[in-house]
Amino acid sequence: MKLFDAYARYYDLLYTDKDYCGEAAFVDRLLRQHGSGGGALLELGCGTGKHAVELARLGWQVVGVDRSEEMVLLANNRNFNSGETIQKAINFQVGDVRTVRVGQQFDSVISLFHVLSYQTTNADLQAEIATAATHLRSGGLFLFDFWYGPAVLTNLPEVRVKRIEDDDLEVTRIAEPQLRTEANQVTVNYHIFLRNRKTSELSEVRESHNMRYLFLPELEMILNSCGFKLLATGSWFSDKPASKDTWYVHAVARKQ
Image (cartoon, rainbow, N blue to C red; front, top):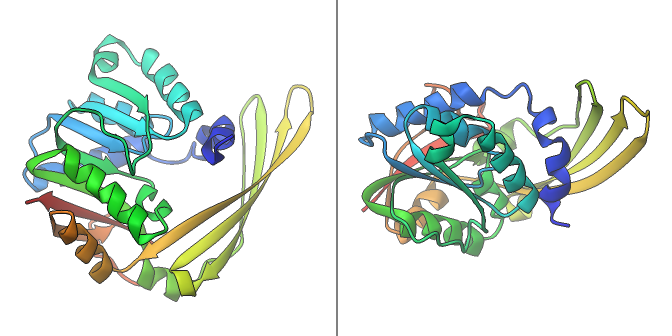
């Protein structure tokens, strides 16, 4: 079972507090600020489809790709219940962001929730960025977010506990990070406890997520090698500039 197939069972519950609607509006605004007037959009790493649905509501025609079959199944179920207009505007499919080719050109490509930081080697980083370039029309935009190196090394990762529940499930997640400066990575070890609230059945899951933090000079070099020009960066979901206090940073690049 792939990592995110198991994660998909409780993913949406863990991120109930995430403002997908606001983030989609933020993405829409950034793309339009840099000259995209809407149109066809490819999302690399679409997860369970919440950003895609919100972007479709804003007028985009969205193709969403994720390597997890379970995530894509949940995304399709969400789309099925979103109304006929949204259904027609979205197509979800299974694919690896490093290698997928959907046979279509797009006005914009996005990759959110740190999907780029899951590409921990230079080859993987370049492969995902090349996927974006392959699918963009000349002058198209690539918008993504990532873990920002100066902030990770200033505000060191620490143990975090998150508890959340709904009518059916209670989830407790303990995140224990390990900083690996020799690789520009953080390995986040998750210990997750699940309790079925109706049957009181207990289960637990252990996962490790390897995340790469990035610095702007290396990122710009890889973007340039794939035919992009870096246009702008800033704190994620904010108008503030990137700084040592912001772990999550967005970037917008244009295909030359």
